[in-house]
Amino acid sequence: MNTDCYICSGKIKKINDFSFKCKDCDYYFSNLKPGVGQDVSGLKFLRKKNFRKIIDVFLKFNKKPKILEIGSGDGYFLEECINYKLSIIGSEASQKSVKKLRSKFNNQIIKLRLPENIKKKYNNLFDVIIFNDVFEHLTKLNEVIKCISRVLAKDGVVVINLPSSDGINFKLSKLLMSIGISEIYNRLWQKDFSSPHLSYFNKNNLTNFLLKHNFKMVSDGYLDTVDFNNKERFDSLFKNYLFKFLLKIFLIIFFYIQRILPKDNIFLIFKKN
Ligand SMILES: [Zn+2]
Image (cartoon, rainbow, N blue to C red; front, side, top):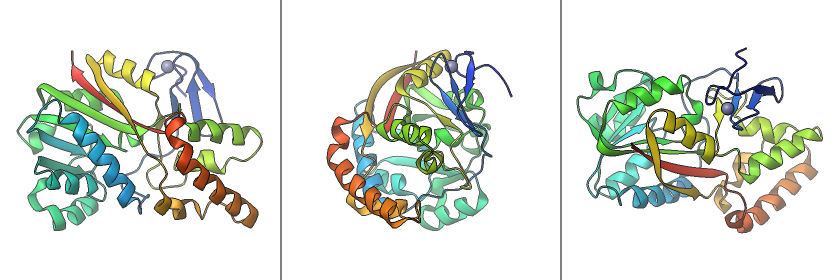
């Protein structure tokens, strides 16, 4: 185990058998096995609403951007960009996902497994390169930033949306873990899923990490985490009916108060310095 933080070279503290934290910059990371593909579905309404929010923000930088999405999953972001009549190329790492997306979006999909030479696949520059819930699943983040940097147009922006370790969910899950309930913490990392989370950033350490690569943050915002129609995805967490019931009550309360709580899902927009 490397004892220095990947982000700031600070000292590492062990959290549990699979996760660690940097004592200096609060960057969390796991030793879970990286994978491709996508496990969480059924969030169509909420995700598309969040995507429109992000699109409205990056359009302020360029009204007619050429967009590359890294990891397109179900293709909801592609659908929204098409609704906005924007030029977009989507990508996926596995042949299976590429095939599925191509059945709907044809030649707008390329097979890409970062870090790799994007120019070989698509010889053009992009004004927007976006990671939608993807960055936290990737290894070799230094190389990832280097390779997208090479295909980013002058004045182009990189958009990263991801779960934040400063969010109320993450903080509460750690609190619960400290009293012996680790289900929520493990679920947030997508432990035992085919593509678990490898890192948990917050706004500060992600900004510092991109700064190392000569990017500065030019905009940021947050996304809603819970909506009434996505409660089912937590249903399988507990077998105990009392826990199931309490979780349901909690989610309903949470829906109303999430706006004033520390944000679970954030997006940051970066430009080359
Ligand atoms: Zn650190």
